[in-house]
Amino acid sequence: MLNVSEIRKDFPMLNNKKMSNYPLIYLDNAATTFKPDCVIDTVVNYYKNYSCNIHRGDYELSYQISDEYDKTRKVVANFINSEDKEVVFTSGASESLNLIAYGYGMNNLTKGDVILTCEAEHASNILPWFKVAEKTGATIEYIPLQNDGVLSIENFKKAMHSNVKVVTLAHISNVLGYVNPIKEITKIAHEYNAIVICDGAQSVPHVKVDVKDLDIDFLAFSGHKMCAATGVGIMYGKYDLLNAMEPFMLGGGSNARFDMCGNIQLKNAPFKFESGTPAIEAVLSIGAAVKYLEKIGMDNIEEYELELKKYAISKIEKLENIICYNSLAETGIITFNVKDVFAQDAACYLNSKGIAVRAGNHCAKILMNTLNTSETIRASFYFYNTYEEVDFFVETLKEVTVENCINILF
Ligand SMILES: Cc1ncc(COP(=O)(O)O)c(C=O)c1O
Image (spheres, rainbow, N blue to C red):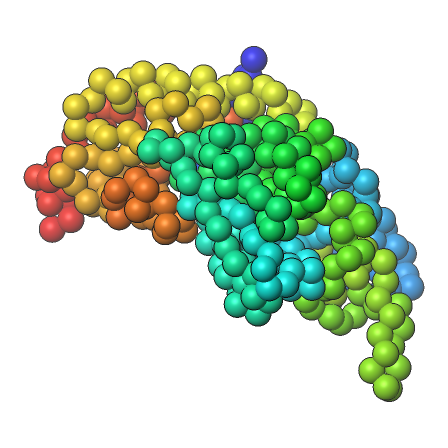
């Protein structure tokens, strides 16, 4: 069991912070998460006590910080159960997904090949594949979703065929919070010799993700959605696939040598993908964040968020003014609308009571057709949210009417 009131003391943003003169209730954790002191201290310690580059300086400070940086790769690798050399530091999930599309897709797909995905994907996991399709002649196909937005294994099986070379899907949808059956999907995809790319932006922060158990070929996620700083993400890839990929960025750090004729000898993965000075403090912060999450326990986090979500749904279902799109999703995301109220207006009303949620299409623009709405409101929990916060949120939802929104807005 989590001791949430103790945990909350670790987060300066949860320490009597107010918004609109109300105690802040932060329910936008799918967008980004708050940072505990240990993460903030790691960043500050880098700037106060090191502030030098890695892998370049022939002096003690640089050796020390290079060592910390290299150890972070091991910390992350242990967290997802991969080899150290399979962990590539990027700036975030978006860069990781683009790197896979440009580095693997552009070099390994050709006319007649199919990229299989679904309508619920985040823009970062679909737009790069539009470019790959445009350049290589491959085509994109979509696994039909059920009416409730669920991606069923049956529909995946129907959509899978021998021309599919890449299956690219979120582990957990950022809009509906459904957990896709990635392990089963991967097993079937491999029988067709297709590779599986898993967008873990919404799963790695909330559930235990084991790349060996899932047997996925690539995994992408962001540090800032799991308590680390912004500006760091991870691309995991099976080592033979990393070697079959080209970096889409070149520069210092990624090459072993080059000459005047343009011959470049790249280093082995993961280094060939890491050109230029990285966000050193952010990389260090993901190490601190992982250790922090591991101390709490990923199983505890998953269990607590699910309980909190179920509690919230049991109350929200009783409200006549709310349309909820994902009551059954087994993660801490609730996607809903308030009857007759524009999503953004409802979010503004909630803001006036100190509650932070997100309204819009959540970067999954195609999914809105399936849901038959142009916008939704998303409340997303993390392990530091409380039952009391849920109570206040639900009470406030009762007040969201056209008249009350007009009063707030005008
Ligand atoms: C499912 C999913 N994929 C990818 C991303 C992109 O992450 P980032 O903006 O950190 O690069 C997000 C961000 O919201 C997401 O929810």
